[in-house]
Image 1 (tube, rainbow, N blue to C red):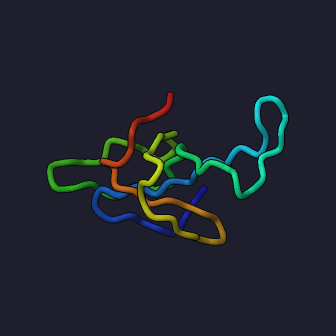
Image 2: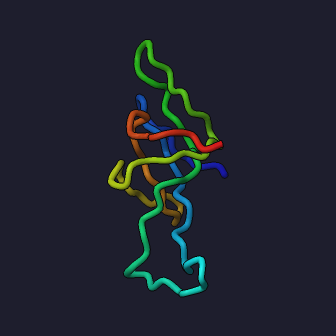
Length: 92
């Protein structure tokens, strides 16, 4: 997916995974009770800080803190922008 947005410094633009709509046993979860997702896919990255290039790449699946970053809407889709230091890890 291509987005016309270039993060600055060590910021990373993430497309969050969709929230679960049913439990493992098949119970439907209402919108008001859905957990905010804590994983997503990196869509764009900034150049990093001086002497500290970013370590994630576009397409990496990452895990981030529950209250990390700022939510924003681009081209009608929801994204999250976080500092690379707020990422907890890369999912393999």
